Image 1 (cartoon, rainbow, N blue to C red):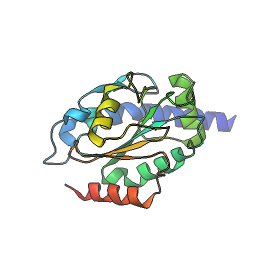
Image 2: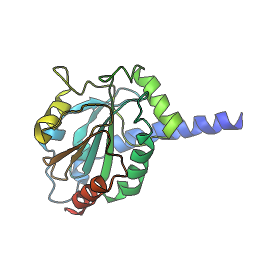
Image 3: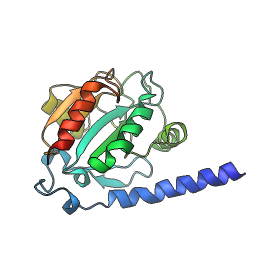
Length: 195
């Protein structure tokens, strides 16, 4: 009974914090950052409640975008992504998760089921958005722009894009690049050092 009450309180806290994070004004971005770069100038529904969220709130930050799946051999990367987010959030890094069912049907659940899985299995706190097509003709425009700017399209789940503070610089990393990968971490630190 105590565990269920504690879990309910933690979920309420998590859900209660999400709107406050989403309400971060663009004016709070570091000085010199553009109000909202074209790449981030779009609205995407949040995973937990499907409420529209402006990606402009991440202008001026270093953004790691990942297409995720709950039934993939790479699913354990959620743990490393969350650790990376928690470690560097205060430095200006944000991880954005986009569940996708594009590869072998490895994300079959509803948005609510995916949100529960992320919370229950990996205590994910980084922003997650609703299930999204990330490749091919039906790719979400955000993913189409990431592919165009980086020259790389997702070949599988947990493909990563690193967007620089300028909101225009985009580098791509394959699914085999873990959140602990040395080259990825060097690139993140280099982007975080830019002001």
